[in-house]
Image 1 (cartoon, helix red, strand yellow):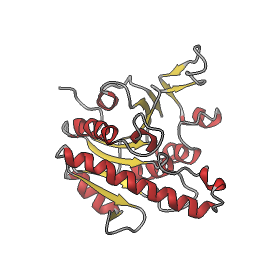
Image 2 (tube, one colour):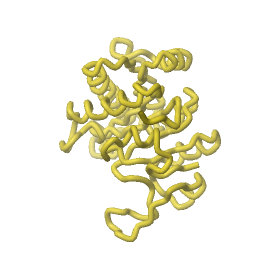
Image 3 (spheres, helix red, strand yellow):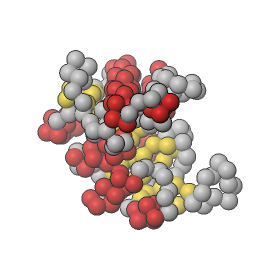
Image 4 (spheres, helix red, strand yellow):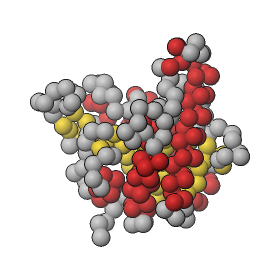
Length: 237
């Protein structure tokens, strides 16, 4: 059995990770695949908090086309993350993996309101937490929410799930000579504008010394390797 590097993690997922091969929406099999990976590390004793985006349902860039102001557009995005959280939790139910949804926006019928103390109690009881609603405030991305929740739950690392196997000096899809970084300082990510997360999230992690590991969620055994192998992906520290 592999030995995890971390006792407690915060996993940041994009909403697009739930789409599967679709162009929009939620693919139940994609949700089940992600939930299976999370259960695999939870069974090793890793305590997991998870922040999910909403880009598979609504993105801020759509606001202009819909003639929406930024604040209500962000509210729609927050609701999209709630939809994703409920969908993903159903996959945990299928796997008999206990989980809770905690929302930064009040929606008591569908999710428990976020509470720092309750979150810590759930994690200590080995319950997987799905944090939805972003930070509960407009103008803040779910990347910022991930950094904030990582700090609040005292996570040892923020795992940023992407479609590529780390951070490169240029787009590896377009440039075959792109160089992958094994490790990179926070300041270099900010100064070179390597957009793996928004600048607010990077700065928050830097100020509080929370390392960020960027990895490819869609590789075989991706999440297990990300929590057990220090060479997987790129470490921002």
